[in-house]
Image (cartoon, rainbow, N blue to C red):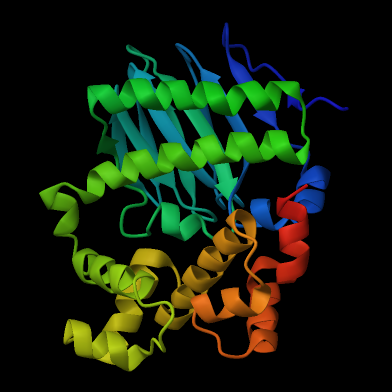
Length: 296
């Protein structure tokens, strides 16, 4: 079994893992990784003179958590100071520059991530902003980074990469779930409305959910709902609902032995064959193939 490339950039006791891009192409066929997968990860302690610029952005989203010290992150020309206990996500394909403070150089944990479900972990309304993480959550996040690094240090099998990516997804969920519970975040225009509509959709997946359903519930115009959904999630309303249906279907395929036609009904499809076509389009494989891979 080959090892993931671990290389140094001059920071003592640093960690740096880079998944070979050729391997990511292979992993993309695995439905469990297609939704969310990390491509790089690392830890740079006391990273004096650390500086990185990408004029045309990066193909992946970048999550940075500052353990101690401080630095700055410039995204599309907007500069944000990043201090101890804060985190920020740099959106994919967005020009950026970041670096450590000269006087108090930061120690940062970070990872790059891609996948169809990435916008559900970091809504666009929250990306590019620095968030303060509670002391309790900071210790949890540092522990989760250990769960990212340990499997990557062992190699790049599907299972190891899935384990590392699952830990990274928990880090994002912990960071942004905390922010959703604060008044300031909930007051971001449209976030509260979209959160309510998503919760409504999740509890009515067996039903026919339409744009009109959302307009009636929110009292917003169809065009405004479409705009808000794209700002907050990165998807149109109905595309997001389809992703929710497929996420739920993946759960049933993985966790139960229910027949596929029954699972189709559970997520709002009366036609099993149409369900299978939509599933393949979004997940990349058929429901039957997904169940086979999930159980191997």
